[in-house]
Length: 311
View 1 (cartoon, helix red, strand yellow):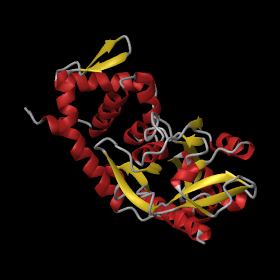
View 2 (cartoon, helix red, strand yellow):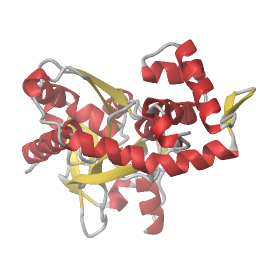
View 3 (tube, one colour):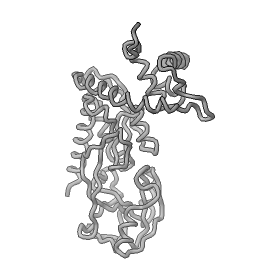
View 4 (cartoon, rainbow, N blue to C red):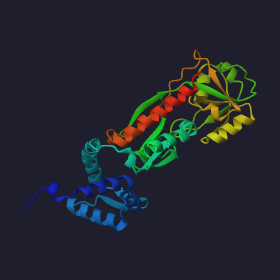
């Protein structure tokens, strides 16, 4: 009699187990696996029989993992992730034949600046790929962890241990105002900016509950007021165009597309801007040729935009 549970198990069932563990929902697991719900139910039945454990129990919100399932997930995940990484590492990337969907989540600061140029660069090299650019949200890190989103581009955020963050470019702080704004100089001080209300960009997961520049000003003994906040860049730009508010941004801002706006430098002796743009992806994809190609391409597009904005 063969008592080796490993030899008796279809390894595809372990992948189903991991997806089900992450989703705790039969329908969502079936969608991620591209199979029917009855097929997921059948796989779970086999897993329960094999491990002699329920693995998941029904609760009002969906499913809940048993203690055995928690331990099983912790034990097998590193091994399956490592196996996937090794297999992907040996895949030769043929961009002309690449026809998969590439879902990339962009923070507002990147979405407004690079959507068009990024689309052009990606489709030029991989014409058969389907590009999906989504706005960064509070669920994006979880979507990357679960494999729904391949790659994210944002500031360096606190993220789950399963994700890896890699620096792409370093940014410098700028203030965006309308043409004809009372601030006429090309370089301004924080004290001069503090006289005007802030139109603050909300970057989910980074500054949901605070305004970074306002905190900097307070630390320097300056009082400032936030006049408007939004995740939508066009709403912020529209407000700036019709008021004396200013928009804190960076040297990534594509002024050539907005002739009615001006980009002001902030005296560097007063403002140390240490933010960088990062690519965030699942650690299992660290050797994935598609992910590596995308990260390098996004870095190149970002660098070209910064160079174009250089005085």
